[in-house]
Length: 160
Image (cartoon, rainbow, N blue to C red):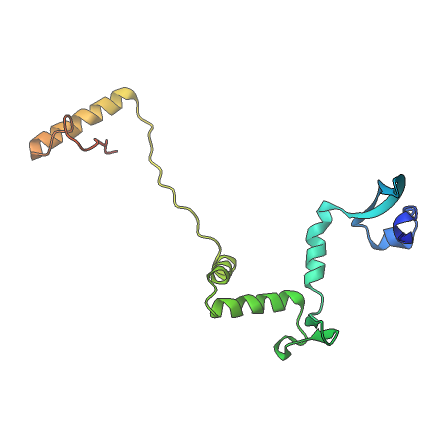
């Protein structure tokens, strides 16, 4: 059994709770050999996640773990960079190699996602205004020799 999980939660005066305000201790019941036992586990508060992510990404990049040599191997280009900087450089490298998803993400981050264009029309007319406008359009079509809207196969659209 892990002693850390079975210890009671730290008091509000302990060193742990003062240095880790983003962590709450939660009590839970676990089964050990068919017997219920109370355990404790750390829970990260939801509002702390953005701060934790920023903290994790600001850590120095150590390289990639080499399982055969049991140590980190770092590309010389990334020496002295943070994890966030390395991630951005690797995204650019992928985009340059033709990765469309990486290209799209870079465009969205640098240029921002394009705004959807929506066409709007002012339809603040009464039914009487609509009928008057429709009659004027039909008169205009008759004068110009245009096709009659009634009886044609094409849908008739009111020009506003």
